[in-house]
Image (tube, rainbow, N blue to C red; front, side):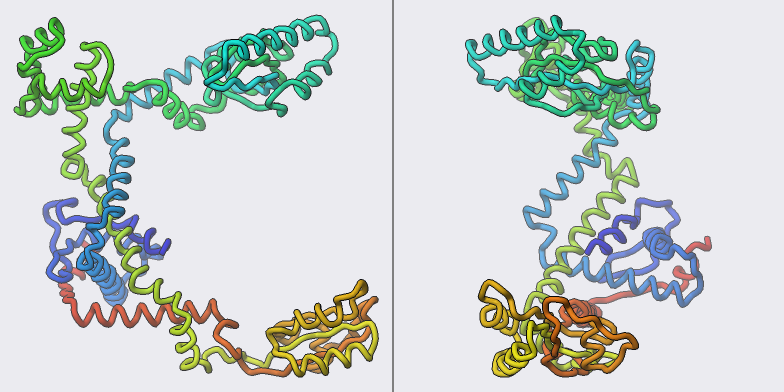
Length: 518
């Protein structure tokens, strides 16, 4: 299933994604597939670059098979399931974030932040140890006061014994909720901790201070240089976005989109809103569409802030929502990724329904094994049985005799309960299917091979075997993994036979010849 997802991830989709002169290379159940879509699939699925009409035919039919499976998923209504739609919406929101901001502005802001970090007196990262007391959100005033008094006492003791380097470590072990030394950078700690830590010299100890987590006394142990911008760019951007509701990239994009979509404010409506706090007038138009005070009121109800800030947020959200609704039309690569995700999820679901579920039916697997038993014969016979190592010849002989009357599946339990139940075990056993070379004792006693003698086990020096040679497995469970793989291929073959029989695939050979040659 992972392989199917990766194949689909690199497809190009949708006839209008590509250039105007994009002839139809095939029709699958009446749906047209442009040359560019197949061409992209072909190039990604054929990394060796092998060419030729035969190679093209193979990939064209493989591509058509996948399209038939997706059509089957749609016929089954899998594209209407709630979980599928939620998955699509989640993926779209995540993908759209990259398109709803000005990437150059984002990188510029990150670079500026990085330059500020680099020029600061204490850049890079620090290794710290701290005496830390966690304070819950619902802490009482009395408990808070007691924590402050305790930390002040610890700090005063540290000041008095500053010459004793080991005293701080002793206090950490005794009083801190965090014992380990930690490497931290400006990208990895609360602002309150960041401000204190980067104001300390190596070896210096801070006064007690608060963060959202609790109360701290910090000692800086080491410093490291700041990593390169490329190494920390993404983390700077993520951190900055968490701290600011609207980042520079979003703000810059909104301003660009205002021009692109002909944003026109209505001064009278805006003035009335800002002076009275509400209005029924039009506030602005976007691409000719009017947005009034009633729409603003619905937005403001869920966005507690001052009216001016609410208006700024409403304008930004309206512009971004309008852009969000046009992403598929405006950005071919966005539409490609959305279509790829949609079809990959559908393909996984329909394959699971048609094939994977059949692999859980043990009766079907057993029946398939019985009709294909000869496919699983080994190249040379193997020994199926048990190797018995005993404390005496008599014990080994008794064990062999006992096992002859016991089902194979119960042999190991029978040995444990009959011969090893006391304080001193009498038998050490190994049960399984042994090929030549797997077990020295089986090689010597069964296959009669092996140039060197097999040393007896010190505490169990007498060895015998019980079992027989087999040319193949007795039960399908012995070859579950290869059998399941083969049965999966068989189910796939049967399914594709049905899809081909009921579906319709038309490949334009003349257009196919022009793939990568136009």
